[in-house]
Image (tube, rainbow, N blue to C red; front, side, top):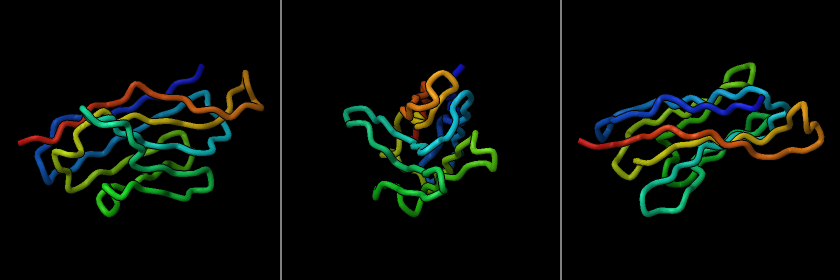
Length: 121
């Protein structure tokens, strides 16, 4: 069974930090994992990604403040967020591209439900 579960969101003051986690199960040969942010009144944007070999990429709006990483088993991807501002408020969801035992020759993306981050004083 495929599962993508995010956690770690919450309410934080401007300038604060949060660490989000994305735990996956049932997905193999992961080619790319991306953290996406959906803020009120804005289109969803990918803020950070990490490829299978470990290459990382960041949106300009978070570069230097956010860090994406993963554990050695590649089943958990983290998003360390520092120097948070109210513009970082949104629902953060994880998109994982890989295969499953049922579809071993099909690489597709799987989404989690997301975790809410609110930056406010």
